[in-house]
Length: 378
Image (cartoon, helix red, strand yellow):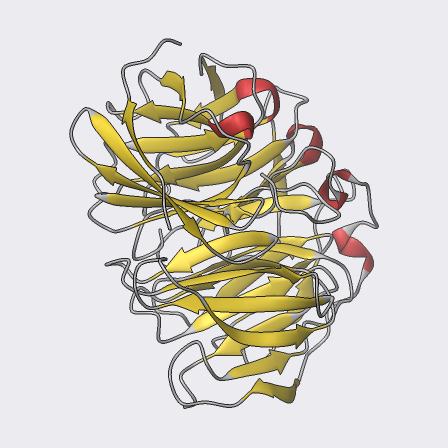
């Protein structure tokens, strides 16, 4: 059963039920929409464990990781899940990969990297002065340049594929929850607390504040593949959009509802956007020129992140199952109308998911350092 409403984009003007605060995945130069935040941003509430301080990511020395037990048997992509050893028990909150899927990175209270498609992982060090919790990661399509954001205005950059990281000056002290950009990394945006929008037009060397039109905490940002359209979702269903490549922004409340946005995903043609909400609903918005049509569709409980194929026909959501008290993975093969449990045995909250544009290769990270991988049983 669903509700419908017409939403105007001409109005004036993250957060699952979990123990943390984070942002977007972004990613997710992904083959679909660049986001991420690896919303990829991950979680979107203000009172969440992601807001807590934790041990510094550089504390653990680099170490190789080996695969462990299979989680859930099956042949279809997203059905067969293998547990990978991340090399850390620290929370991992966001994940991003190169366009060919050979290199994958995850960030949180640690930074880990895989150069073999997620089979093995090593822990990478970051500057000792960096904030201890990173909430979103984004990179160029080839993965040679990467950016990560986190608490207290932290921005980190790597120009060697994640082997080393350097601090960048953001000019703000608000938490940054999500980062995205163009596939070549030349143009970047980061969003965060108190309506913060930062923009860089020089590949992350310098960052400039932009007027969002709201003081709500902004949780996740998406960029269309042509670079013209950007969407930001914030607390209290605040929706901020730009149709001129970030030059100007319009803020409006999506709908009067108790739903709290948690993550976003969009098709590669930017015609359909899904917002995963705190109470387990999926808000689907179909672009109609000047209006949006919203459908409230029953979805997974306590979700943290959503990802899908470039056409949006298949979607995956990760989060927490309050009944089993385990991390959960759910899948929809009808655009989010119905959800099927795929795995329900992870020991802790699952925070973010990233994959190839065809959905044949997927990776999930969790709050206790979990990394799960699905490659369709291959």
